[in-house]
Amino acid sequence: MTSFEDQGTGGSRAPSLALLRASPRLFDNPWLDKLSRVHWSIPLILYAPFVGLLAWLSFQTRTPAVVVGVAVLGYFLWTLTEYLGHRYLFHAEFPGAWGARLHFLIHGVHHDHPNDPLRLVMPPLLSTPIMLIALLVGRVLFGVPLVYPALMGFMLGYLSYDMVHYYVHHAEPKTRLGRGLRRVHMLHHFRDPACGFGVSAPWWDKIFRTEHLPAQQDGPR
Image 1 (tube, helix red, strand yellow):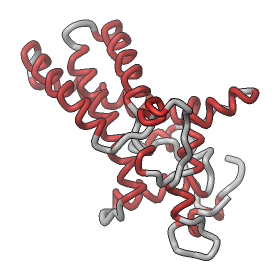
Image 2 (cartoon, rainbow, N blue to C red):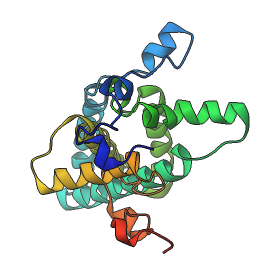
Image 3 (tube, rainbow, N blue to C red):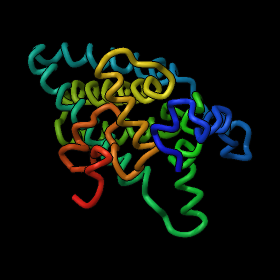
Image 4 (cartoon, rainbow, N blue to C red):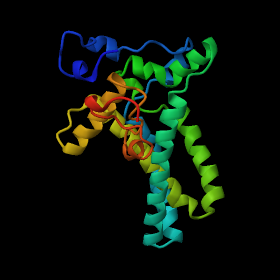
């Protein structure tokens, strides 16, 4: 596997940009394959109106302090969903040829072609069911109307995840936070995919002890 240090430095062992960017067709059906390729702006276009609607419903029924507090809780629920989904679903090893195919469709294609700009944010085919499940679970946990700010925070967390994911692959961060997020995610891709599952929320890796350790500390924990 190509190391993180090789990947970003222009070294002779670094994989070509064409190889990293050019992902294959996932489906024979042209429409289905087209739906698997998503411009980074699509999540914003699709979900920003829902965030606005949820915000309006929230402030109509609860005080600003309650809305903000529940929305922050919804955001943190997203970050935990992001971590657990990335660790236990995206990196699950399913048995058999169909299992390998399913893993490749869910996440393997991204690890094989990490810089394909059209496969860096979640396609609506995947994100929409997640939001519907979040709505149903939120109604059970919070009831109506508190589900509105909870789901708003959850959606904002999802959007931050998608935007951060695109950013760390295709930008050159100038801030300490941006450089740190990019470094952790590139280590996940090019050094150890069994660590660094929190893309936009790396604190969960510290809590669950899956953070990347300095090279001299690698080994059993």
